[in-house]
Length: 217
Image 1 (spheres, helix red, strand yellow):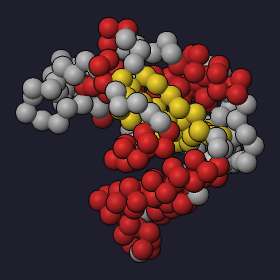
Image 2: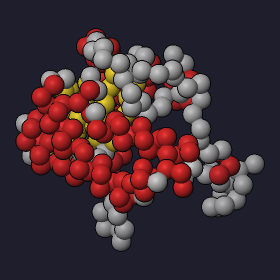
Image 3: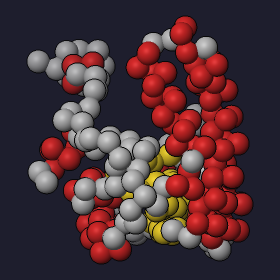
Image 4: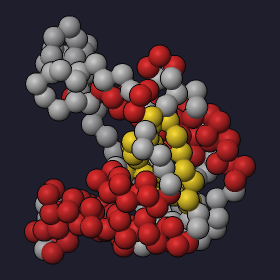
């Protein structure tokens, strides 16, 4: 698959077939993803592959309370309770995410992505705002992995909703203390058709020339 094509049509997939994910396809995706950039080439990412049903059920039980808290925080809970008052397309999206959360154990493969804390280069730690830079040492790998899974014909849904349950997830999967949770990815063969192109804002809305707000002509 052409890289640009994969970038334009790798949606969040939340409805999967029951078919298992071939191990060779996963290994190929991981093998490609590992070439992501990382600070100092430390490559601190670590991935736990979960296919056992009982562990998938346990992950669902940890995910659901965080999903419900997220819906309250973002207003998605109001959409679910009173869908007629909101944009139909957004309501459909929230409903799909809600069903995904409630049936998380049905997702054939779960990838729990962590990162070694000692490998993070947090250059914004002293700024008077929320730190974001540490993620640069792991999320390029996550994005590479999502694109590689798409090239393998596999759908994926990446969230960070399990991160607040880090202690419980680490205990469940025997993840050592020095690893921090970064992402959870549900993987499987997509049940529906692939979109031809995702809906995104045009370049002129987020890219500027020389100064913020100056059109990029």
